[in-house]
Image (cartoon, rainbow, N blue to C red; front, side, top):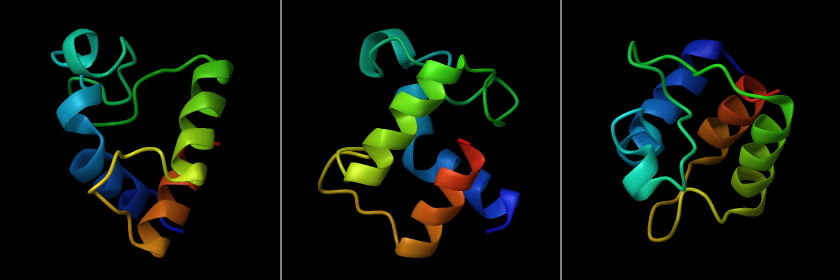
Length: 79
């Protein structure tokens, strides 16, 4: 999976709650997206936690569903 597809999925499906501006209010304090729209620097445990939630389907929360290719690209980005 291409990194740009992972970043596009991150922007489309995660940024509304996990950007620096929204993370405290909506994202459980976890900013996945940096101010420039890229993947924020994350501790290994935060990457693993985010990846586990994407893998399980609990993130992004329903009714949002990631297409399989976007999910794979996002998981690759979170490695």
